[in-house]
Image (cartoon, rainbow, N blue to C red):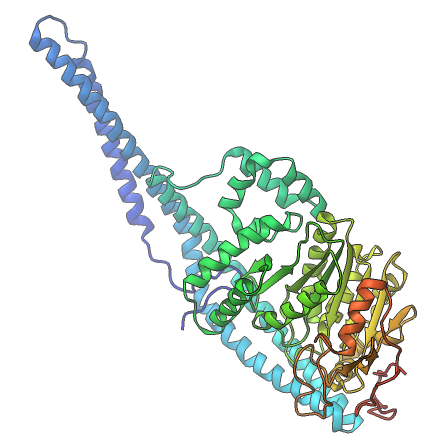
Length: 563
């Protein structure tokens, strides 16, 4: 199996070419151009023949025809000479450098695979030991897991550094190859004008999504040109209007879907396309990155973002990927149906953690900047809309890190955490969350939810062990079943956002946190509409859960409960 580079998808294959031979042919074409030039000079002199008569006139005419024809041949020979030499130079400096890295990358890839397997095994061992082992055993297991993860991360950095070098050399060669083909084809294909290239450079250099939006709106005559040339950039650039991004990304996804990709990647593309085309009206694909991360990332917008007065952003947690966007889309549509002028975005814009990765902050550290940029872009394009972030499980960890990264909470008005794996324990993040003007926070934890509690307990060094339900200023709401408007509301049976409970651990009966008909989801709808939950904590119809026991793993450094 051929390896491919992580960011650009370049195959790890030897680039074939002979720069010496190419230079020889370049010189040969230069000699041909020179000889033809001398011939043209000679022929051109025939156009100045003295005399009169039909023969002389015919000779002069023929000489002019030949001289004109030679001009085109000389230009072609000069083009071939220049293209070959420039490509030969690029091959020597870039392709050969990429070739020299192949063996090192293959060796580093094998080392990372071994280190990753060891880290997964150590992480799972630490997770299970934390629930049943002695304190000393737990500490040893956690230490072993951290050492294994450190070794894995070091191997990953070594491989990433080699890939970065490879991609840099490969990209330079690839650009030279494309340039050579474009020159040989006479510049065929859509090229950007200098004005469009200048605008693209400004868009990419803009400091904020607001600056991106202002630049984009100021140059309507260049928008289609840039979008055609660089749909991958414009479809994901925060600050570009969402209807533009939706149209571009749909075309990109459709082309990829029609190419019939296979394997896990193909499954994700199929699921995303099917989610996009189902239901009416269809959602907008407002971000789409099929190959820039460990899994396909995307965001789907349900409802009319342009006219919405309330916009919700749903953020998934552990083990989530785009194959589950359909049920998240159901939640988004149900949120929109709760009132008028509501739109909801399902944001799968980061690589969610595995069970072994969940105790670490790494996935949150990687995902928070992407979510931060998305929320700032949303605020730039729709500053007047009320904005809520609804985050489940580890998604609330990532969202808390993003929203708490600035004192203004990125323009978010409501932050709703369900089944949280714990907020980051960074004092500055917590201070920003609690003191941001206009931000209100809400949280719920089902008494049947084991995995959220385990996530808080097992975060390494308590990195995301902060219990959101007990933070000052936090409004807690119920998810254990209740009654409202004369109707029974279902309890959340475990940790799932939609279906499922706690895996092999005990679970109750009912619907997930974000399923319509559950107490949790009813309260989220009421928070969006009124700013307050719709049921009373531990009120009528609530149930006691298996996992809300006062002595459950009480020796651990984190108290996982709301009480």
